Amino acid sequence: MILHLDLLRHGETELGGGLRGSLDDALTANGWVQMREAVVARGPWDRLISSPLQRCARFAEELGARLKLPVTLEKDLQELHFGAWEGQSAATLMETDAEGLGLFWADPYSFTPPDGEPVSAFSERVLGAVSRLHQAYAGERVLLISHGGVMRLLLAQARGLPREQLLNVEVGHGGLFSLQVAADGTLKEGE
Image (tube, rainbow, N blue to C red; front, top):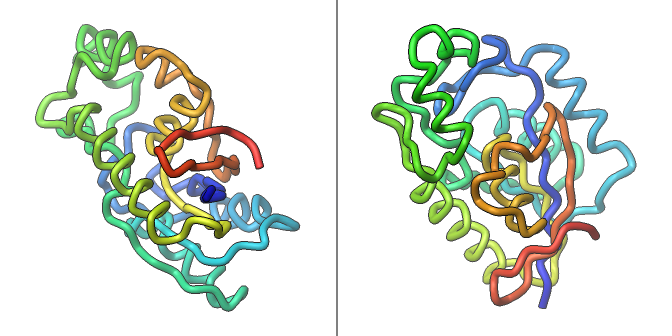
C-alpha cells in the first residue's frame, strides 16, 4: 500500500535567511501567510506530521485545530544540524570558510560543516522516519510540515538525482510537493 505524503516547507522566519538548522526561529507574519496560502484547496489529509521546531509545529497546530486533524511531532524530521555554521549566511561563510562551503555545495555527503551533522546520518534519520510513517499510515494522505533540507533529500531521492545534486533541488518557503511512498521505501513524486 502507498503512503501519500504531501511535503510543506515552513515559511519565512524572524531571523531571516542563512543556515537555520536546529535554531528554533519563529515565523514572520509573511511566513504564516506563505504557509496558509500553500494549503488552500489542497488535501484532504488524514493527519499532520511536523518537525517539533516552532517554525513548523505552530502552523501544524493551527491547521490541525482548524481541520480537526491529529498532529504528531516527529523529531527525526528536523532540519540538518549545521554545527558552527548555524545561523550564518552563505555570504558570511564565503568570507570565513569559503573552502568548506565550496566542498559542502559540491557534495554535501562528503563534507560536514564543523561540529555539524553528517548528511549521511541526516539521510538515515529522515528516511527512517518516513519508513515509520509508511508502516503506521499506509493508505492515508499525510501532510508533513518540515524543512528545506528534509524536503530536498526526499525530492532528490524521488527524482533519482545523484547525491552530489542534493542542494540543487529548489524548495522555497511555503513550497508544497507531493510524494508517494511505497512499502519498499521507494519515493515517487506526484499524487
